[in-house]
Image (cartoon, rainbow, N blue to C red; front, top):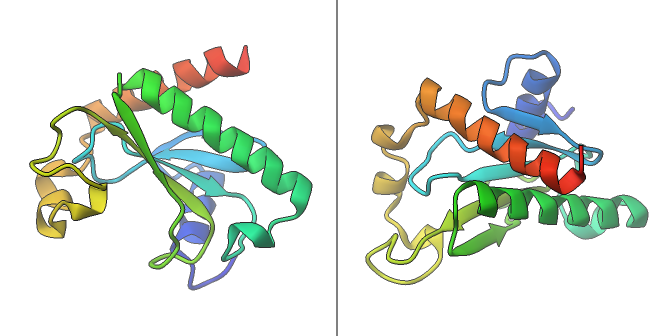
Length: 152
């Protein structure tokens, strides 16, 4: 764990069973629901290894991580009936490899474009914080779809 890393802090909360957004542990990462749900079903896939860049991961781990990210994206797409998926690995704010997975729907924004074109004051407005009942339902939906894809 890196003391100044928000992703590492959230992973520690998962490990101590104190992260309410946690959905499932996978071989290479952790599936969590995003705090804000302007785009319903916004999910993250947090890498178990703290590195700043994807290319810094060991080759076999990286392949597995990318495959699992693809499964998380597919499960999220199915769980929220998305028309399109936006998947991003940025790291400018939190420099720990993690994926932002956004289910998108036709006309879900005024202007076609990436999620980050939505005004931050709107996207991160308190009204879009995930409510407890909603969170439980979202976690069940994604976990159910992941189970189908993983054949368990």
